[in-house]
Image (cartoon, rainbow, N blue to C red):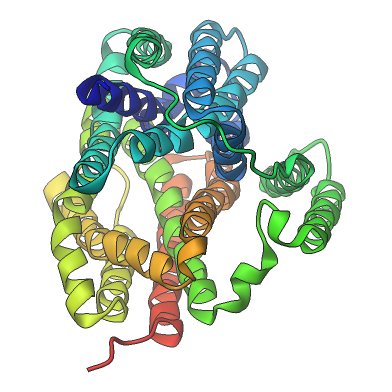
Length: 451
C-alpha cells in the first residue's frame, strides 16, 4: 500500500473536476469574442459540463462498485484529458460544447471513485484524515481555479486553461496505475443505466427549453423541449418507483421530511450561488474591463471562508443542531445578494461595492456547508448515507444548471452596459429571495437539537 501516492492520485484527479467547474466562469468574455458566441448561448459553456456531472455522478459510483473503482477512476481521467484536448483545439462553440459534455462524463466517473478509493484504501483515523485532506484540496482547487485560470487567460488565452489539464491528468493516471490497488474484489451493484439516460435526457431538454426561452431570437420555441423533458422526467420517476431499492434514486428516501427540506434548502441556496458566480465575473470583465485574474480573485473570500469555517461550524452544529447555523447562514447570503444589487456600472469599486457583499455571502456559505452535509447524512438511516449525500450533491449541481440556464435572460440584455447592469441587479435580488427561501426551509423543516 502506498498511502501518499494514493492520496495524491485522488486529489489530482478530483481537482481537475473541481477546477473546470469554476474556471470557465472567468473565460466567458474571451470565449464570446474568439468563437463569436451569441450572448444567449454563453450559459451552455457551463451547463454542457454541469449536466452530466450532476446527473451521472451517482451512476459513476455504482459503476465503480460493479467494475472496479481504480478502473473507473482511470477511465474518467482518460475521458477528461481527451475532452480537455478537444476543448483547447475547439474551432467553434459546437465543438467546445461536445467536449465540455465529455469532460462532465469523465468527472462523473472520476469524482465518486476517487473518494471511494480513499474509503477502501484507508481505515480508522487515517481514513478521516485522508478524506479531510481530499476535501480541503478540493476547496483550495475551487478557490485558486478562477484566479490561476484568469491569469492564464490574460497572459496566453482561454485555450490554455484546458491544456493545463493534460499534465495534471497524466500524473494522476500514472500514480493510479503504479500505486493504487483495486482493494476488495469489485462487488456487483445494481446499474440503473436506463434511469440515468432518462434523467439526463429529461433534464437536458428542460435546460434547453429554459435557455431557448431566454433568447428573443431563438429558432425553436421553448415549449416543445420542455414538454419532452417533463415527459422524460415522468418516465424516470415511474421507472425508479418500479425498480424500488434497485433504482439509482429509490423514491423511499423521500419518506424523511427533514431530508426533503434539506434538499429544498440546497436547491434554493446553490441555485443563487450558481447564478452569481457566473454573472459577477462577466460584469467585471466585459463591462468594467477588469483583468480576468482580478475578477477571479474577487470571489476568493467564498471558498476560503468555506474551507476555513467548516470545522468550526461543524462543532457549532454538533452542539446546537443544524437549524441555527443554516438559518443564520442562508440569511447572511440573502443580505449579501441584496448588497450586490447596489452595483452601478462604470463606478464599481471593489472594497466598497463588491467586497462587503462577497464577505457576507462567504460568511453565510461558511456557516452552511458543514452543517448541511452533516444534517443530510443524519436525516436518513445509516444504510442510506451514501445515497443521501450523493443525491444532495446532485441537487446542488442541478440547481446551478437551472440558474445558469435562466441567466440567458440577463445575458440577452447587451444593448448597453447600463441595461446589462440593470438586469444584473434584478438577478442579484432574485438570488436574495432564493437564499431567503433557503433560510425559511431551514426554519420549517430542520429540527432543533433537543436540550
